[in-house]
Length: 474
Image (cartoon, rainbow, N blue to C red):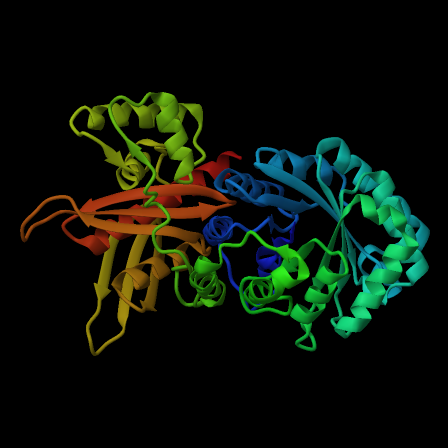
Protein backbone atom coordinates (compact mmCIF):
# COMPACT_ATOMS: atom_id res chain seq x y z
CA UNK A 1 0.00 0.00 0.00
CA UNK A 2 1.41 3.37 -1.01
CA UNK A 3 1.43 6.32 1.37
CA UNK A 4 -0.24 9.60 0.41
CA UNK A 5 1.46 12.62 1.94
CA UNK A 6 -0.72 15.40 3.33
CA UNK A 7 0.76 18.88 2.95
CA UNK A 8 -1.04 21.48 5.09
CA UNK A 9 -1.17 25.05 3.70
CA UNK A 10 -3.35 26.61 6.44
CA UNK A 11 -0.61 29.01 7.53
CA UNK A 12 -0.07 30.26 3.97
CA UNK A 13 -3.78 30.73 3.37
CA UNK A 14 -4.27 32.56 6.69
CA UNK A 15 -1.58 35.09 5.75
CA UNK A 16 -3.38 35.90 2.50
CA UNK A 17 -7.00 35.90 3.72
CA UNK A 18 -8.22 39.00 5.62
CA UNK A 19 -10.98 37.00 7.31
CA UNK A 20 -8.46 34.65 8.93
CA UNK A 21 -6.30 35.79 11.83
CA UNK A 22 -3.20 34.15 13.30
CA UNK A 23 -0.71 35.82 15.63
CA UNK A 24 2.98 34.88 15.83
CA UNK A 25 2.32 32.63 18.82
CA UNK A 26 -0.71 30.99 17.21
CA UNK A 27 1.32 30.04 14.12
CA UNK A 28 3.75 28.14 16.33
CA UNK A 29 0.83 26.49 18.14
CA UNK A 30 -0.76 25.64 14.77
CA UNK A 31 2.46 23.92 13.66
CA UNK A 32 2.53 21.87 16.89
CA UNK A 33 -1.10 20.80 16.40
CA UNK A 34 -0.46 19.73 12.80
CA UNK A 35 2.64 17.83 13.86
CA UNK A 36 0.51 16.06 16.47
CA UNK A 37 -1.88 15.03 13.67
CA UNK A 38 1.12 13.51 11.85
CA UNK A 39 0.70 15.54 8.66
CA UNK A 40 3.54 14.95 6.21
CA UNK A 41 4.36 18.58 5.42
CA UNK A 42 3.64 21.91 7.15
CA UNK A 43 3.96 24.85 4.76
CA UNK A 44 4.91 28.33 5.96
CA UNK A 45 4.78 31.70 4.25
CA UNK A 46 7.80 33.22 2.51
CA UNK A 47 10.16 35.58 4.32
CA UNK A 48 8.96 39.13 3.74
CA UNK A 49 10.25 40.74 6.93
CA UNK A 50 13.71 39.26 7.42
CA UNK A 51 13.72 39.68 11.20
CA UNK A 52 10.16 38.60 12.07
CA UNK A 53 9.57 35.88 9.48
CA UNK A 54 13.01 34.31 9.92
CA UNK A 55 12.43 34.08 13.67
CA UNK A 56 9.00 32.52 13.08
CA UNK A 57 10.39 29.83 10.77
CA UNK A 58 13.22 29.09 13.22
CA UNK A 59 10.70 28.80 16.07
CA UNK A 60 8.47 26.45 14.06
CA UNK A 61 11.49 24.36 13.03
CA UNK A 62 12.37 23.93 16.73
CA UNK A 63 8.78 23.12 17.75
CA UNK A 64 8.00 20.50 15.08
CA UNK A 65 9.38 17.02 15.80
CA UNK A 66 8.24 14.92 12.84
CA UNK A 67 6.76 16.79 9.86
CA UNK A 68 8.65 18.31 6.97
CA UNK A 69 8.72 22.13 7.12
CA UNK A 70 8.38 23.65 3.66
CA UNK A 71 9.27 27.30 3.06
CA UNK A 72 9.01 29.10 -0.29
CA UNK A 73 11.75 31.29 -1.69
CA UNK A 74 11.04 34.54 -3.53
CA UNK A 75 12.63 36.40 -6.43
CA UNK A 76 14.43 38.78 -4.08
CA UNK A 77 18.21 38.57 -3.97
CA UNK A 78 19.43 36.44 -1.07
CA UNK A 79 16.03 34.80 -0.54
CA UNK A 80 17.35 31.25 -0.92
CA UNK A 81 20.16 31.82 1.61
CA UNK A 82 17.91 33.60 4.13
CA UNK A 83 15.14 31.00 3.85
CA UNK A 84 17.45 28.02 4.26
CA UNK A 85 19.28 29.68 7.14
CA UNK A 86 15.95 29.98 8.99
CA UNK A 87 14.86 26.47 7.99
CA UNK A 88 18.05 24.42 8.30
CA UNK A 89 17.47 23.15 11.86
CA UNK A 90 14.11 21.59 10.96
CA UNK A 91 13.95 17.80 11.27
CA UNK A 92 13.00 17.62 7.58
CA UNK A 93 13.54 20.92 5.69
CA UNK A 94 12.13 21.60 2.22
CA UNK A 95 12.56 24.64 -0.02
CA UNK A 96 9.82 25.57 -2.48
CA UNK A 97 9.93 27.45 -5.77
CA UNK A 98 6.47 28.58 -6.83
CA UNK A 99 6.00 29.97 -10.33
CA UNK A 100 2.90 31.11 -12.25
CA UNK A 101 2.25 29.02 -15.35
CA UNK A 102 -0.68 30.79 -17.04
CA UNK A 103 0.30 33.70 -19.35
CA UNK A 104 -1.86 36.15 -17.39
CA UNK A 105 -0.37 35.33 -13.97
CA UNK A 106 3.14 35.17 -15.41
CA UNK A 107 2.84 38.78 -16.60
CA UNK A 108 0.94 40.01 -13.55
CA UNK A 109 2.92 38.38 -10.71
CA UNK A 110 6.41 37.83 -12.11
CA UNK A 111 6.44 40.44 -14.91
CA UNK A 112 8.40 38.01 -17.06
CA UNK A 113 8.08 36.45 -20.50
CA UNK A 114 7.98 32.63 -20.82
CA UNK A 115 11.68 32.16 -21.65
CA UNK A 116 12.78 34.39 -18.78
CA UNK A 117 10.42 32.50 -16.45
CA UNK A 118 12.05 29.17 -17.38
CA UNK A 119 15.49 30.66 -16.81
CA UNK A 120 14.44 31.95 -13.38
CA UNK A 121 12.92 28.60 -12.39
CA UNK A 122 16.12 26.76 -13.32
CA UNK A 123 18.30 29.22 -11.40
CA UNK A 124 16.21 29.23 -8.23
CA UNK A 125 15.81 25.45 -8.07
CA UNK A 126 19.52 24.91 -8.65
CA UNK A 127 20.34 27.31 -5.79
CA UNK A 128 17.81 25.57 -3.54
CA UNK A 129 19.19 22.12 -4.34
CA UNK A 130 22.70 23.24 -3.41
CA UNK A 131 21.38 24.07 0.05
CA UNK A 132 18.65 21.49 0.64
CA UNK A 133 18.11 17.87 -0.32
CA UNK A 134 14.36 18.32 -0.85
CA UNK A 135 13.10 20.95 -3.30
CA UNK A 136 9.52 21.36 -4.49
CA UNK A 137 8.49 23.07 -7.71
CA UNK A 138 4.93 24.41 -7.50
CA UNK A 139 3.33 25.10 -10.88
CA UNK A 140 0.67 27.64 -9.95
CA UNK A 141 -2.44 27.86 -12.16
CA UNK A 142 -1.11 24.89 -14.14
CA UNK A 143 -4.53 23.92 -15.51
CA UNK A 144 -4.87 27.23 -17.38
CA UNK A 145 -1.34 27.18 -18.78
CA UNK A 146 -0.26 26.43 -22.32
CA UNK A 147 0.49 22.71 -22.18
CA UNK A 148 3.75 22.89 -24.13
CA UNK A 149 5.11 25.61 -21.84
CA UNK A 150 4.00 23.73 -18.69
CA UNK A 151 5.82 20.60 -19.85
CA UNK A 152 8.97 22.63 -20.54
CA UNK A 153 8.75 24.19 -17.09
CA UNK A 154 8.42 20.77 -15.42
CA UNK A 155 11.38 19.37 -17.38
CA UNK A 156 13.42 22.44 -16.45
CA UNK A 157 12.55 22.05 -12.77
CA UNK A 158 13.41 18.33 -12.68
CA UNK A 159 16.64 18.92 -14.58
CA UNK A 160 17.64 21.65 -12.08
CA UNK A 161 17.09 19.29 -9.14
CA UNK A 162 13.42 19.43 -8.04
CA UNK A 163 12.36 16.32 -6.12
CA UNK A 164 8.64 17.16 -5.85
CA UNK A 165 6.46 18.58 -8.64
CA UNK A 166 3.11 20.05 -7.60
CA UNK A 167 0.48 20.96 -10.18
CA UNK A 168 -2.21 23.42 -9.07
CA UNK A 169 -5.78 23.74 -10.28
CA UNK A 170 -5.90 27.27 -8.87
CA UNK A 171 -9.14 28.25 -10.59
CA UNK A 172 -10.92 25.05 -9.49
CA UNK A 173 -12.92 24.79 -12.71
CA UNK A 174 -12.12 21.21 -13.68
CA UNK A 175 -14.30 18.16 -13.17
CA UNK A 176 -12.54 15.09 -11.71
CA UNK A 177 -12.40 13.30 -15.07
CA UNK A 178 -10.96 16.43 -16.72
CA UNK A 179 -8.32 16.72 -14.01
CA UNK A 180 -7.42 13.04 -14.48
CA UNK A 181 -7.05 13.56 -18.24
CA UNK A 182 -4.91 16.67 -17.62
CA UNK A 183 -2.54 14.76 -15.32
CA UNK A 184 -2.29 11.78 -17.66
CA UNK A 185 -1.43 14.07 -20.58
CA UNK A 186 1.32 15.80 -18.59
CA UNK A 187 2.78 12.50 -17.36
CA UNK A 188 2.78 11.10 -20.90
CA UNK A 189 4.49 14.22 -22.26
CA UNK A 190 7.09 14.37 -19.48
CA UNK A 191 8.40 10.85 -18.74
CA UNK A 192 10.91 12.39 -16.30
CA UNK A 193 8.04 12.80 -13.82
CA UNK A 194 8.41 9.13 -12.93
CA UNK A 195 11.60 10.07 -11.06
CA UNK A 196 9.94 12.64 -8.75
CA UNK A 197 7.02 12.82 -6.34
CA UNK A 198 3.83 14.23 -7.87
CA UNK A 199 1.69 16.56 -5.78
CA UNK A 200 -1.51 18.47 -6.50
CA UNK A 201 -3.43 21.42 -5.11
CA UNK A 202 -7.14 21.60 -5.94
CA UNK A 203 -9.27 24.69 -5.42
CA UNK A 204 -12.80 24.13 -4.10
CA UNK A 205 -14.47 26.72 -6.33
CA UNK A 206 -17.14 24.21 -7.45
CA UNK A 207 -17.11 22.09 -4.25
CA UNK A 208 -15.14 19.40 -6.10
CA UNK A 209 -11.70 19.78 -4.53
CA UNK A 210 -11.84 16.46 -2.65
CA UNK A 211 -13.16 14.62 -5.71
CA UNK A 212 -10.40 16.08 -7.89
CA UNK A 213 -7.75 15.28 -5.26
CA UNK A 214 -9.03 11.69 -5.09
CA UNK A 215 -8.91 11.44 -8.88
CA UNK A 216 -5.32 12.71 -8.75
CA UNK A 217 -4.40 9.97 -6.25
CA UNK A 218 -5.78 7.34 -8.60
CA UNK A 219 -3.67 8.95 -11.33
CA UNK A 220 -0.44 8.66 -9.35
CA UNK A 221 -0.33 11.79 -7.17
CA UNK A 222 1.37 11.05 -3.85
CA UNK A 223 1.04 14.39 -2.07
CA UNK A 224 -2.14 16.46 -1.60
CA UNK A 225 -2.25 20.04 -0.35
CA UNK A 226 -5.01 20.52 2.24
CA UNK A 227 -6.31 23.14 4.65
CA UNK A 228 -7.28 22.52 8.29
CA UNK A 229 -9.90 25.27 8.58
CA UNK A 230 -12.66 26.47 6.29
CA UNK A 231 -11.14 27.59 3.02
CA UNK A 232 -11.20 27.26 -0.74
CA UNK A 233 -8.83 24.26 -0.87
CA UNK A 234 -9.21 20.52 -0.26
CA UNK A 235 -10.31 20.04 3.35
CA UNK A 236 -8.11 17.80 5.50
CA UNK A 237 -11.26 16.37 7.11
CA UNK A 238 -12.89 15.50 3.79
CA UNK A 239 -9.74 14.01 2.30
CA UNK A 240 -9.11 11.95 5.43
CA UNK A 241 -12.66 10.59 5.25
CA UNK A 242 -12.07 9.43 1.65
CA UNK A 243 -8.79 7.75 2.64
CA UNK A 244 -10.50 5.95 5.52
CA UNK A 245 -13.45 4.79 3.41
CA UNK A 246 -11.83 4.02 0.06
CA UNK A 247 -8.07 4.10 0.61
CA UNK A 248 -7.66 0.33 0.84
CA UNK A 249 -9.67 -0.14 -2.37
CA UNK A 250 -7.30 2.27 -4.14
CA UNK A 251 -4.22 0.65 -2.61
CA UNK A 252 -3.24 3.80 -0.73
CA UNK A 253 -3.40 5.25 2.78
CA UNK A 254 -2.23 8.18 4.88
CA UNK A 255 -0.44 8.47 8.23
CA UNK A 256 -2.91 10.99 9.69
CA UNK A 257 -4.09 10.32 13.25
CA UNK A 258 -7.78 10.24 12.45
CA UNK A 259 -8.92 9.79 16.06
CA UNK A 260 -7.59 13.26 16.91
CA UNK A 261 -8.50 14.93 13.62
CA UNK A 262 -11.89 16.43 14.49
CA UNK A 263 -10.79 17.82 17.86
CA UNK A 264 -7.59 19.35 16.49
CA UNK A 265 -9.20 20.87 13.39
CA UNK A 266 -11.95 22.38 15.56
CA UNK A 267 -9.22 24.02 17.63
CA UNK A 268 -7.46 25.29 14.50
CA UNK A 269 -10.74 26.62 13.13
CA UNK A 270 -11.29 28.51 16.38
CA UNK A 271 -7.78 29.96 16.25
CA UNK A 272 -8.19 31.12 12.65
CA UNK A 273 -11.68 32.61 13.05
CA UNK A 274 -11.30 34.29 16.46
CA UNK A 275 -10.28 37.70 15.20
CA UNK A 276 -8.91 40.44 17.41
CA UNK A 277 -11.35 43.24 18.25
CA UNK A 278 -9.80 46.48 17.00
CA UNK A 279 -10.80 48.08 20.32
CA UNK A 280 -9.02 45.52 22.47
CA UNK A 281 -5.31 45.17 23.29
CA UNK A 282 -5.78 41.43 23.72
CA UNK A 283 -4.90 39.42 20.63
CA UNK A 284 -6.85 36.34 19.65
CA UNK A 285 -5.86 32.80 20.23
CA UNK A 286 -4.00 30.57 22.64
CA UNK A 287 -4.47 31.60 26.22
CA UNK A 288 -1.48 30.13 28.04
CA UNK A 289 1.54 29.69 25.81
CA UNK A 290 3.95 30.09 28.72
CA UNK A 291 2.62 27.05 30.54
CA UNK A 292 4.87 24.47 28.86
CA UNK A 293 4.21 21.28 30.77
CA UNK A 294 7.56 19.83 29.69
CA UNK A 295 9.60 22.68 31.21
CA UNK A 296 10.58 21.63 34.74
CA UNK A 297 13.91 22.67 36.26
CA UNK A 298 15.71 21.87 39.50
CA UNK A 299 18.83 23.05 41.34
CA UNK A 300 20.80 20.33 39.52
CA UNK A 301 20.26 21.95 36.11
CA UNK A 302 23.22 23.86 34.68
CA UNK A 303 23.28 27.12 32.77
CA UNK A 304 22.88 25.40 29.39
CA UNK A 305 19.70 23.64 30.56
CA UNK A 306 18.26 26.90 31.89
CA UNK A 307 19.16 28.72 28.65
CA UNK A 308 17.47 25.97 26.64
CA UNK A 309 14.32 26.20 28.80
CA UNK A 310 14.26 29.99 28.40
CA UNK A 311 14.41 29.56 24.63
CA UNK A 312 11.68 26.91 24.78
CA UNK A 313 9.21 29.32 26.42
CA UNK A 314 9.86 31.83 23.68
CA UNK A 315 12.65 34.21 24.73
CA UNK A 316 15.69 35.16 22.68
CA UNK A 317 18.11 36.53 25.29
CA UNK A 318 21.66 37.81 25.06
CA UNK A 319 24.46 35.94 26.86
CA UNK A 320 24.50 38.70 29.48
CA UNK A 321 20.77 38.31 30.18
CA UNK A 322 21.07 34.51 30.29
CA UNK A 323 23.75 34.94 32.95
CA UNK A 324 21.43 37.20 35.00
CA UNK A 325 18.54 34.77 34.66
CA UNK A 326 20.73 31.81 35.68
CA UNK A 327 21.99 33.69 38.75
CA UNK A 328 18.41 34.48 39.82
CA UNK A 329 17.39 30.89 39.04
CA UNK A 330 20.13 29.50 41.32
CA UNK A 331 18.98 31.63 44.24
CA UNK A 332 15.38 30.45 43.93
CA UNK A 333 16.21 26.81 43.04
CA UNK A 334 18.24 26.51 46.25
CA UNK A 335 14.98 26.91 48.19
CA UNK A 336 12.64 24.91 45.92
CA UNK A 337 12.55 21.32 44.72
CA UNK A 338 11.57 22.30 41.16
CA UNK A 339 10.62 25.32 39.06
CA UNK A 340 7.91 25.38 36.39
CA UNK A 341 7.69 27.37 33.14
CA UNK A 342 5.57 30.05 34.85
CA UNK A 343 8.18 30.52 37.55
CA UNK A 344 10.93 30.71 34.97
CA UNK A 345 8.83 33.28 33.10
CA UNK A 346 8.73 35.39 36.27
CA UNK A 347 12.51 35.15 36.66
CA UNK A 348 13.05 36.30 33.08
CA UNK A 349 10.63 39.20 33.54
CA UNK A 350 12.40 40.40 36.67
CA UNK A 351 16.06 39.64 35.83
CA UNK A 352 16.52 39.96 32.06
CA UNK A 353 17.09 43.19 30.17
CA UNK A 354 16.74 45.67 32.97
CA UNK A 355 16.73 49.05 31.24
CA UNK A 356 16.31 52.72 32.17
CA UNK A 357 12.56 53.46 32.13
CA UNK A 358 11.46 55.51 29.13
CA UNK A 359 7.88 55.63 30.46
CA UNK A 360 6.99 55.97 34.15
CA UNK A 361 3.56 55.34 35.66
CA UNK A 362 2.35 58.41 37.53
CA UNK A 363 -1.35 58.01 38.30
CA UNK A 364 -4.23 55.88 37.12
CA UNK A 365 -7.96 55.97 37.71
CA UNK A 366 -9.95 52.91 36.72
CA UNK A 367 -13.73 52.53 37.13
CA UNK A 368 -15.90 49.53 36.40
CA UNK A 369 -19.17 47.93 37.41
CA UNK A 370 -22.03 45.79 36.18
CA UNK A 371 -24.02 48.80 34.95
CA UNK A 372 -21.23 50.91 33.39
CA UNK A 373 -18.45 50.29 30.89
CA UNK A 374 -14.97 49.96 32.36
CA UNK A 375 -12.85 53.07 31.82
CA UNK A 376 -9.24 53.98 32.55
CA UNK A 377 -7.51 57.36 32.86
CA UNK A 378 -3.72 56.95 32.86
CA UNK A 379 -0.95 59.49 33.32
CA UNK A 380 2.53 58.43 32.24
CA UNK A 381 5.71 60.46 32.08
CA UNK A 382 8.21 60.20 29.23
CA UNK A 383 11.16 62.09 30.64
CA UNK A 384 9.60 65.32 31.84
CA UNK A 385 6.69 65.13 29.39
CA UNK A 386 3.31 64.31 30.86
CA UNK A 387 1.18 62.00 28.71
CA UNK A 388 -2.46 61.10 29.30
CA UNK A 389 -4.77 58.45 27.91
CA UNK A 390 -8.46 57.81 28.52
CA UNK A 391 -10.16 54.68 27.17
CA UNK A 392 -13.18 52.44 27.59
CA UNK A 393 -12.73 48.67 27.60
CA UNK A 394 -14.38 45.31 28.21
CA UNK A 395 -12.93 45.30 31.73
CA UNK A 396 -10.58 47.34 33.93
CA UNK A 397 -7.36 45.73 32.64
CA UNK A 398 -8.55 45.85 29.03
CA UNK A 399 -9.30 49.58 29.43
CA UNK A 400 -5.96 50.25 31.16
CA UNK A 401 -3.91 48.51 28.45
CA UNK A 402 -5.86 50.38 25.79
CA UNK A 403 -5.02 53.65 27.50
CA UNK A 404 -1.31 52.75 27.42
CA UNK A 405 -1.61 51.94 23.71
CA UNK A 406 -3.32 55.27 23.13
CA UNK A 407 -0.47 57.13 24.87
CA UNK A 408 2.26 55.20 23.05
CA UNK A 409 0.45 55.26 19.71
CA UNK A 410 1.29 51.64 18.92
CA UNK A 411 -0.26 48.19 19.34
CA UNK A 412 2.09 45.39 20.34
CA UNK A 413 0.98 41.78 20.19
CA UNK A 414 0.00 40.75 23.73
CA UNK A 415 1.53 37.30 23.75
CA UNK A 416 0.54 36.33 27.28
CA UNK A 417 -0.94 37.81 30.45
CA UNK A 418 -0.64 36.04 33.80
CA UNK A 419 -1.89 37.00 37.22
CA UNK A 420 -1.48 35.14 40.51
CA UNK A 421 -1.44 35.74 44.24
CA UNK A 422 2.00 35.68 45.87
CA UNK A 423 0.81 36.10 49.48
CA UNK A 424 -2.33 34.99 51.33
CA UNK A 425 -5.14 36.78 53.11
CA UNK A 426 -7.28 39.83 52.42
CA UNK A 427 -4.17 41.98 51.80
CA UNK A 428 -2.65 39.45 49.40
CA UNK A 429 -0.10 40.75 46.90
CA UNK A 430 -0.91 40.10 43.26
CA UNK A 431 1.85 39.43 40.72
CA UNK A 432 1.30 39.96 37.01
CA UNK A 433 3.45 39.01 34.04
CA UNK A 434 2.85 40.70 30.68
CA UNK A 435 4.56 39.34 27.56
CA UNK A 436 4.62 41.63 24.53
CA UNK A 437 5.95 40.70 21.11
CA UNK A 438 7.65 43.22 18.84
CA UNK A 439 9.45 42.34 15.63
CA UNK A 440 8.88 38.69 16.45
CA UNK A 441 10.88 38.98 19.69
CA UNK A 442 9.40 38.44 23.14
CA UNK A 443 9.66 41.00 25.97
CA UNK A 444 8.22 40.52 29.45
CA UNK A 445 7.44 42.82 32.34
CA UNK A 446 6.52 42.10 35.96
CA UNK A 447 4.36 44.02 38.43
CA UNK A 448 3.53 43.35 42.09
CA UNK A 449 0.88 45.16 44.13
CA UNK A 450 -2.14 44.59 46.38
CA UNK A 451 -3.98 46.21 43.44
CA UNK A 452 -3.92 43.76 40.52
CA UNK A 453 -4.90 46.47 38.01
CA UNK A 454 -1.97 48.60 39.13
CA UNK A 455 0.34 45.57 38.99
CA UNK A 456 -0.89 44.86 35.45
CA UNK A 457 -0.24 48.43 34.28
CA UNK A 458 3.28 48.38 35.74
CA UNK A 459 4.02 45.00 34.14
CA UNK A 460 2.83 46.27 30.75
CA UNK A 461 4.90 49.46 31.02
CA UNK A 462 7.94 47.44 32.14
CA UNK A 463 7.76 45.27 29.01
CA UNK A 464 7.09 48.36 26.90
CA UNK A 465 10.23 50.08 28.23
CA UNK A 466 12.35 47.10 27.16
CA UNK A 467 10.96 47.30 23.62
CA UNK A 468 11.47 51.06 23.37
CA UNK A 469 15.03 50.81 24.72
CA UNK A 470 16.07 48.06 22.31
CA UNK A 471 14.49 49.80 19.30
CA UNK A 472 16.35 53.00 20.21
CA UNK A 473 19.64 51.09 20.45
CA UNK A 474 19.12 49.32 17.10
